Length: 447
Image 1 (tube, rainbow, N blue to C red):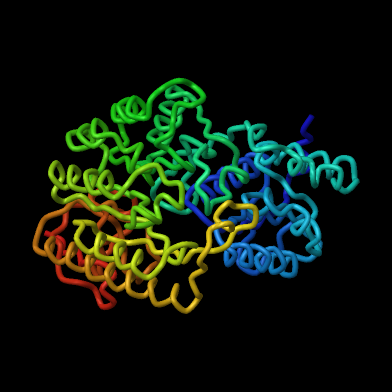
Image 2: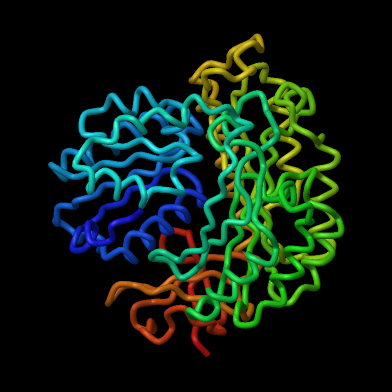
């Protein structure tokens, strides 16, 4: 039983690392605590509760998690420190050993955060008996699904439609951190989107670990979820955060091209443009299939923004394989590359692949792809200058420029002179001007 009085008047501080799904879940934790009477600590205010939601996608991410935990504990002496997320699931002993950590919650336990806190405060005892409970849990036994549809401090809502992954790619630990693919029902997700609309939400981003695999739990289809959400009144825009190429059905692409609210914006993880490396990674597609998806999107939606994830320096990626990847990407009509250097992950089968790429070569390859990305993004933006576009603006500090995004995810900047408070979370038609000072956005011209 939860003692709500134990929460009244307490303050909480939050720190999130990693993906949009983590940010969405942290926002949900914040809302749950707020409903119990906990307010978010202001700048310079000591918190009674510190919650760190961790990531473990790379070794660098692991290090940042440890640094964040230590910093939060030091800046908030006496606070009850809770650590959750992928790093907490995979490295519980290391997390529990950090000075100041009171509670470590894995993928099954995090949904019961409030109960764990209540137990700790009402009993007056530390909760060490819970610290390692989740870490003897096998991947197949991570089954809980924590609903999340939250805005946090952003204009956009993030709707969690799926969790976990059943694809054991050789370089990845996500199935061990989050379990196998699972999801709630379409009906429950439509209800959450309708609630977001009632709260004034205009745009919803669908998040998850492998969202194209939606339906494993409920025997439904992702395209049926898309069609159902497309009918939610009040939500003007839906975006799909990321879709595996083999799960990006032609039927889905064709539907999005004519839908009411799904935007011409796709994010597709490629990881490598070499078929040899894709096989080493145990990816479920080849470059021919990936190119087909890109060509179909551009055929049906010429203005579509297409973001692509690429990993460089994976074990087994010789120089000739990287050159294949570079030339493949160079020839694709895509908009932006998200480039990640490969990082060794303990327990992954990639460790058995011969030929290790040096750190220096990883840096050189990353730099080349980032330069290619900048060229493609700049060209994509440049061809839109002079056009009219509908922009969903986000709140800005007084005297600062406002920013927002077009339907096809072009970042737009409205000068402080023209910025108005009433534009916050509103769709405004502007004309797209030239690049801003640092080339990260196009200037908005009010008409």
